[in-house]
Length: 106
Image 1 (cartoon, helix red, strand yellow):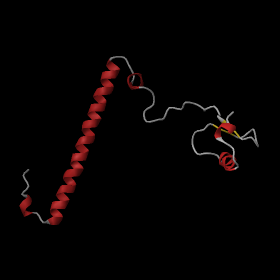
Image 2 (image 1 turned 120 degrees about the horizontal axis):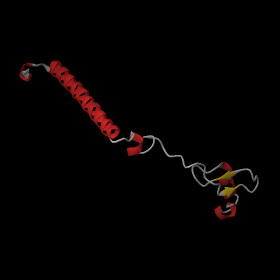
Image 3 (image 1 turned 90 degrees about the horizontal axis):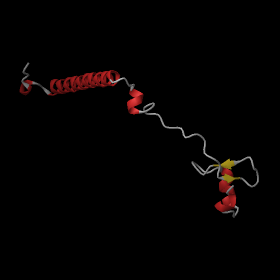
Image 4 (image 1 turned 30 degrees about the horizontal axis):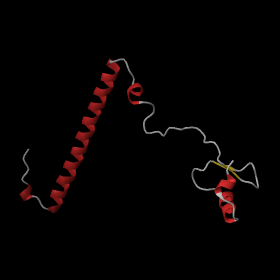
């Protein structure tokens, strides 16, 4: 299937390139699918599961649970902050009022 690209106009050439790239993408997906099947077959043949070999759920963050609070609002003891993430409004207001971070430690 030899195509003489010298005889193609601009639109035909762009169409050919688009079809070739699409086919290339399809071939890559097929090859990855076959590779994935081989890997799963090898793992199963050895008596393991995918999670045994590669760990737990893929692409998910580990949840380390909750973090203990590090700072407490002196005006309201129920308001605490772990020191992670965005500072709470009460923390910023306390700093503006002249308190220091160490004053707000639990």
